[in-house]
Image 1 (cartoon, helix red, strand yellow):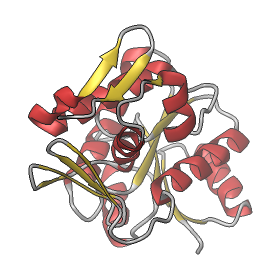
Image 2 (tube, helix red, strand yellow):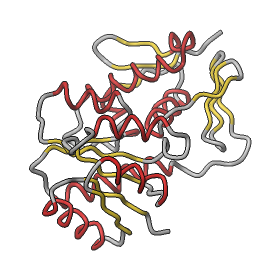
Image 3 (cartoon, one colour):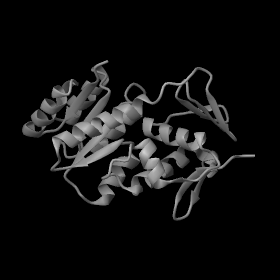
Image 4 (cartoon, helix red, strand yellow):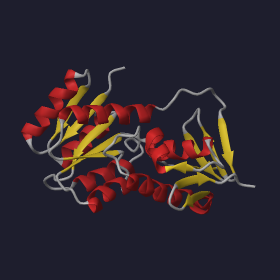
Length: 229
């Protein structure tokens, strides 16, 4: 299947450069230059992934990202942020809002294409047999349906949050270092920092509610999902 990628940037040269390299790798590419066009294309063209610049006219990339994650029809789309801001706080904010990855300008088009492939593989996830259910206390992870519930109530998780919880659930009771989680969930791209893991765990705990206490921090090492009694 040919994946569809939406490139959102108000700089025509960057849009053309990114679109060229993606098309060269066989992706179907659409483009948008502002927030309104981006949201319209995300809803109508059903892309598999959006490459989203943060500095857009009218509405910021953060606003667009929030809207993408808010709507049921677009919330599972992969999002890679493009940002000229190098401060950690800007990257952390994007991850906290549900971005799957980020790339800092100026960037290598080849690296961006590799990041796109990594996120798409992560979104697809491994094939599993029907009825494959993992249970940890009130948390249930249905691997066949890619669905998580707490106390029988379904949760809305991003693809990355789901893969993070799935990894912890499959290895419940065993401590997973940040490096191990980066390797499994984020495919260990060298420029992705351990702070990425921490922010996603924080978001995951918040969505799990009271069950978030089962995701235990092992200070100085990583995390584990406690084997609930």
